Image 1 (tube, rainbow over the protein chains, first blue to last red):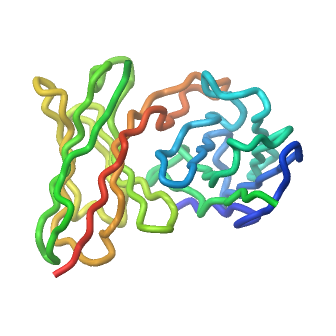
Image 2 (cartoon, helix red, strand yellow; image 1 turned 120 degrees about the horizontal axis):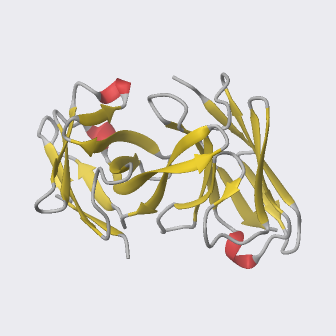
Length: 107
Length: 126
């Protein structure tokens, strides 16, 4: 199975900060990588698919990129509604797997 | 509007079979490479993909649980059913159904879960 390792596991940031979350795959997955946001008590929401394509309706402050097996989710200017957990997920091979998540907290 | 909604028992005893139903509206399973997936999340833990179905002839399971899972669809009722046999405490989780779709990308089609149900919490306890 492909392992996805997210870092950091949690971070504290302030409104307006630029935040970068990382997801590292245990082997090459091309760009078959998606990002989800989950607020406490809520359902996960698809933010980005294929490593860098923004899902419709998602604010442009979110962006994704890939460098080899390392994937990055960047929030250019953190907003109050962005405090949540973020999960990466690969759809390169079965079984589809998720990372363990990064929790973004208010500083 | 695309919606999915899960239904199932709140409490299941160890060794029993858990049966969950996903009621789908706003799209047809298997139409245009759209299907239904099941994903679960134990309390305070990460998400785990379990299975997906595009038709009763095209269904895939996670390898670690494939001997205990069964997924099927009833197109006439717009329902997808997931069964988990011989449950144990480790199956306690919120179970979500979600639409799985193929998004176009420079590499081809990339599958993602774009619309999720509200989830249903299942506790395994004696």
